[in-house]
Amino acid sequence: MFEFSTRGIGENSPRTLDAWKAIGTYPDLVAGIVASLQLAVITSIGVLVVLVPTMVWVRLRLPRLRRVIESISLLPLTIPAIVLVVGFSPMYQWMGTNFSDSILTLSLAYAILVLPYAYRALDAGLAAIDVKTLSEAARSLGADWFTVMLRVIVPNISSALLNAGLLSVALVLGEYTIANNLLYPNLQVEIVSLARTNAGVSIAVAVASLLFAFVLLVALSFVGGQRGVRRRNRERLVQTFARDFSGGTR
Picture 1 (tube, rainbow, N blue to C red):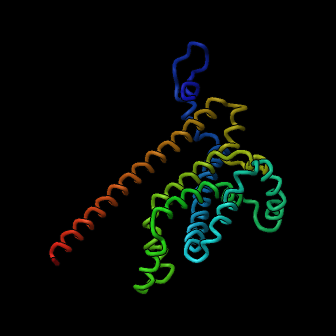
Picture 2 (cartoon, rainbow, N blue to C red):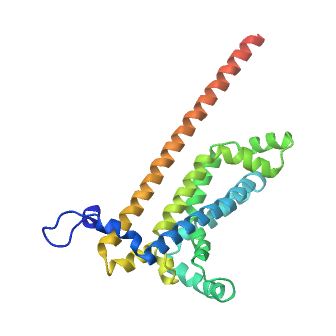
Picture 3 (tube, rainbow, N blue to C red):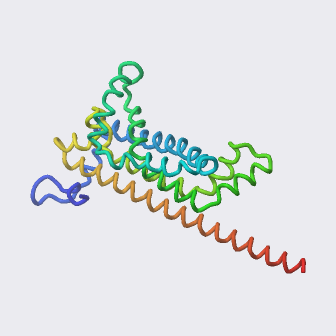
């Protein structure tokens, strides 16, 4: 793909970066990039704000509903995107008439799309900690539920939050079917539209989006690895202190 985006005009023309330099000269493409980035941020934050308190509350108060919540969250995987469009279309027609026809309203549809992936990532993070013990300890010290969530639960599942956020961003940046059928010009729709007139620039943008996702993956793995090292160091320190303390009391 990169090789194609650097081809010159003509059979024996030298390599050129004209396609990459021309990315910013297409207003519709720039608008699509900005809109997709905004959608990625809004969708990621919205899904995390809804899922994290719900999943923690279900684990603490309604453990019997865990399977039900899990089944509901996995439903978007079983429904084709084009079928989802048929269901979304009347809702977006009503929203466009009575509320807003902004492309940012696509975050509602995208939140449903990323739900299965974000749920699985967060579920793995919550399963790795003792949510009940941590919350009860914090509550016994006088913390309210907001403090428990913000200062106890969230720091212990930070890697899971990063995973869920990255999956949400990757899905939103690569989504085409829903945006195209609902007539919203996001990044992928603009790439396909631009490919009809300038394939080089279109391929350059596609490569750039892949590189962006790759950088996010590398950053996530680095941050997760650093957090894991710090956690293991803290555990060793606590174990050493406990052994020294027990030896001293004897």
